[in-house]
Every structure is written in C-alpha cells, then in structure tokens.
Image 1: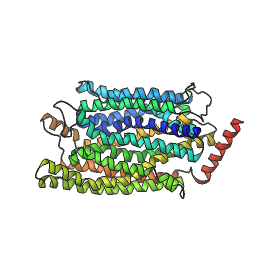
Image 2 (image 1 turned 90 degrees about the vertical axis):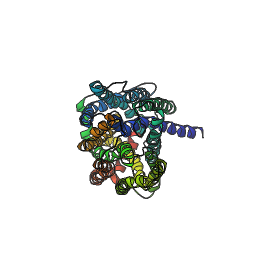
Image 3 (image 1 turned 30 degrees about the vertical axis):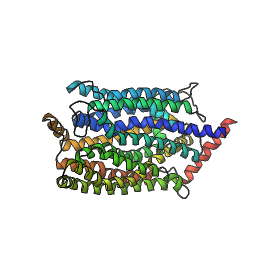
Image 4 (image 1 turned 120 degrees about the vertical axis):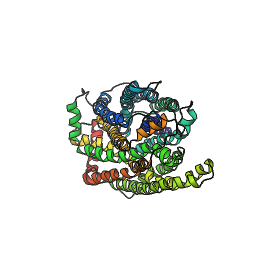
Length: 493
C-alpha cells in the first residue's frame, strides 16, 4: 500500500511540473503576438523575420541540450537537475520578455529580439529533460499511457490558467493612462508574467522533489556533433514522420490560441469573452483525456489518433462558420442595444455557440497531444530497436523543436496575414490619435480566417501524412515492445 501511494504521488508530482511549463508556454504562444503587435505596436515585418531566425538557432540549441542531458550523471538523476535549472532560467526570461523598461524605437526592437531568443533557450533547458523522463518511468505501454495522460492533464491545466485568467488578470494589474480598450497595458503583462515565472519555479520544485528516475538507461557519454544528430534523425524514419504530422497539427492549434486574443478584442470587441471561450474549451480538454482510456479498449493507437484529428477538423469547421456569422451580428447587436451594459451582455450571449463548438475541437486537441507524447516514447524504443542506440533526450529534443517549428508556421501565417492588411499601421494610427484600436472589416475577416479556417487545412495535411507514412503500429509495434522488454531483462541478469 505504501509503495502504491509513492507511485501515485510520483506520477502526480511529475504532472505538476507541466503546469509551470505551460504557464510559460501559454504566455509565449497565446499572448506574446498580441503583446508585441497590439500593446507595444511593433511592426509585423520585424517579427516575421525574427521568428524563423530564432528557429535556426533552436535547430542547434535543442539537440545540443539533448546531448547534454544524455551525458548527465548526478546523484540527483539525469533529468531532474536540468528541470529545476531550466525552470528558474525560463521564469526570469519570461518576466524580462514581457517587460520593456521604458524602451522604445530601435533599442526596444533589439531588446525584444534578444529576450525572444533567450526564452527559447531557457525553455529548452527545462522542457527537454522533463518530457524525456517518461520512458524512464516504465517500459510498459499502459503505464506510459498513464504517465503521459497525467502529464498532459496538468499541462492542459497550466494552459487553461493562462488562456482563461489572462484576459481578466492583466487588466486588473494594469495601471496608467495607456490602457487599450481591452484594459491591457505593458505593465499589466509584465506583472502577470512575473507571477507566472515564480509559479513555474514552484511547480518545478514540486516535480523534482516528488519524482524518482527508476528506469533510466545510461549509455556511453558522447560529444555533441551535428553528425550524431543527423545520424539519429536519419536512422529513425518514424521520428521524421512524427515531426512532420505533429508539427502541422500543432501549428493549427497554435494559430487558434495565438489569434484568439486578437479575435475577441478586435472582432468581438469584448476581451473577457475569451475567458468564457477558453473555459468552455477546457471542458472539452478534460473530456479529451478520457478518449484514449475509453477507446483503447477496442481501438488501436493509430485509429484513436485518427479519430482525434477528425474530431478537431469537425470542431474547427463549426467554429469558422460561427465566427463569420458572429462578425456580421456584432455591429447589429451594438446598434440595437440601449446601452453599453446591454450590448456587452448581448455580445457575450452571442458568442456562446462559438464557445460551445470549441468543446468538440478541444476534445480532439487534448487526446491528440496525449497520443503524441505516447508516440514519441515509442519512437525512442523504435530507434533502439532499429539502430541499437537509445538517444532518449536527443529524440525528445525534437519534440520541443517541432513545437517551435509549429509556432514558426503560426507566426508566419499570423504576422504575414496581418501584415497584408496593414494591421500594425491601423493600431499605431489609433494610438497616435489617442483613440481605441479599431481595425477595418477586411482585417476582421482575415483574423477569423487565420484563427479558424487555416487550422483545418493544416489538420487535414497532418492526417494525410500520419495515415500514409506512420508505421509504428500493429506487428512492428509489438516487435519493438518485445525487443525492449527482453533487452532490459537481459541487462538486469
């Protein structure tokens, strides 16, 4: 009984670490674009250039960190020291990224570029060792599913805290005369980012103190080399396929999460409606965690993942249709309302169908992310089965890198789309005239298309790649599992 309690506490403690990571993720992926373009008024062209350049460095930094983790030998373990070091570093950089310290013009652009790159580097310090720990818990499929589900559950909680609370908390923390109509100010974002940074460290500490690395495989220490990285990637064909289909589907979701704040402030005109949207979507996320345990009784992981993507696609189709209808109705609601309070309440009510449809997409997204984590643990085993080398952390470093690549796709589409409609020019013009930021009808339509229609295309492409190229299921998956079990048993003899 005592060992069982320790087992449960270890899994829950591990999951808690994901809350902090996603507080930082959420601020970066869901609100940074709005903060930089709408709150600070930076040019889309600058950010359109910065993001791909940052990914070039990540392509070096992420696998380098994976090699460092693989070579780590301490009495505290292979992964846990880096989780804590990374959390402290990332918490500090998160605060600095959302703090401008009175800078403007060229110095502000340079400062943002430096902090942007440092966020990616510091996030890598914690993210790679955290997710690389999953295979170290167990080789059994059911246990891995459990650990992955627990981690993704807490990860979703962290993301939910950010997307639901930020539209409410940032205006409360904002001061001064430079508030946007949604109540956001640079100071409000800075204070909230500081709080999230502190919580990131606290949750990482809980994770480190409550978990044990019981199934760690130590190989020979290796020096970092691009030749080794390319060898690992080239030698694991299923890792390459995974990166492609996961990157496409993740980019679709990032587009929605990153565009949501702009959609609700500029198209809907009520920033706090985003909190309702995300709260209802969180219900879908929770339900999505039940998809794998329930469907795994009758269906394979391949079928479950396909169902998840199809569910996402249907949900997005509904959201796009409703978002276009809502764009037309908002002016009519405002014109018909006798006062601001009545208009506010009517708009919130009008967004309910859109928010409810988000449940369907969230169910698919949530189960999709859990499946991806399980797939990556299986891919580590497949690499050992095929090449005789495990390369755990290098393989898992690809997860963080593909997320950043997905974010790059998101920002290219987001900034490129807004740039075509001169969004930042409209923002800065309104700020210069001292009026609330209001964009034209064409830009509002573009925001809806970017947030709800483009993800459908990306999800369809992801589904095609997955169904046609991913082979790690059925007989091959069984062969890999049996090989790993037999090898571990022989190593203990």
